[in-house]
Length: 450
Image 1: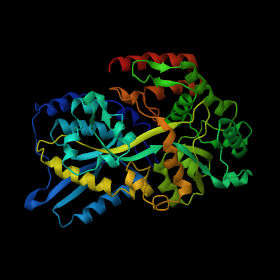
Image 2: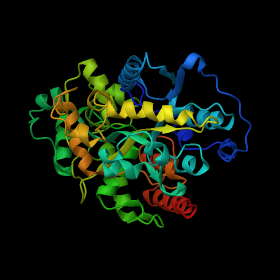
Image 3: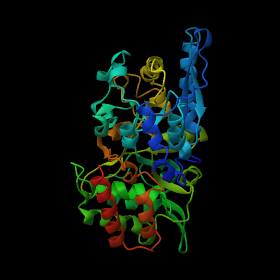
Image 4: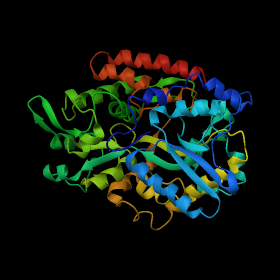
């Protein structure tokens, strides 16, 4: 989830993000006490405790997170504890975590995405937190039910494996200059599919058969058409898995209808072009007018001086919903289990003091006390650019499928099985029926595996 306006969540690296390497077996052996331990190189002399944190955030959200870490270190400089943050590339993160756990050199804590690490939880690559939290003073009652539910895995006895830090959804960011130029009312953004296409058509620019400015920012492959399909499909009634996680591709006709809807953006309505490769840069330079993305882009575009606003994702199908993702902090196994207490105290501080993170960094807060703070709407970036990401959480329900092969189901990916299957549809090399059949077969096997 490396997100930034210039180079977001790596599309070429998404496969790594969604694949467990052979060292998973070694990681599981360590959790069971069967792997040799090599002492981590961490300072603990003279009463100084150094907590090692691996970070895969990038660009604008990394800047804010670095401020959070610096604030912790400043507040604890005379208390004998500091956080040492090391950056790890997102597309290498899971591989390196697995290797570090297997060799006894794991960091104390790092970033995770709720719902995508069921296999880590089952194999002991992440540490169950219920007992550790109980002794830390962290008030779980102050977290939303949604965030705590997303942080638990049935594969590990429904234990908590993450401390929620931010709640994220995909909502439209809209170029206000393009709205004004087209004679549209920025106070009345599109609420349904018909209005959306009308706005997109009015703001698109074309040179013959070439779309030179996309009314709806899209790419020819990768994350953007995949997540668009996923949202629209679920709005139309498709479900990747049944509620009991037993049946794949519920209501496949709706899923196929959504594939056609995406194709029509390119070929029928001509409000999108397949020629865009870097969607973040393209929107930032005015090559697109409406761009559904996440709150991780806000800080970068504000710093850039882009004149944009956000609105709630329109109701294209029968039900208004959008993509949900939660970022949080997870602990990794330590031979010296006494380290867990200090690490959890550090995470508690970061969570208790996450006002900056959820008003400037990204996302809505999972903490009830922060949400109820009267300054929450006025602090940080203007509400016109972040408000939709907070208010839209009410219908952000297209989240992860919490099974061992969960990463294959995520709709926010440019390289998993879903994205690769749909790519053939977007390029005209695969029929919609064939794509749905392949998804149904693969996902059913994944669900059957637990």
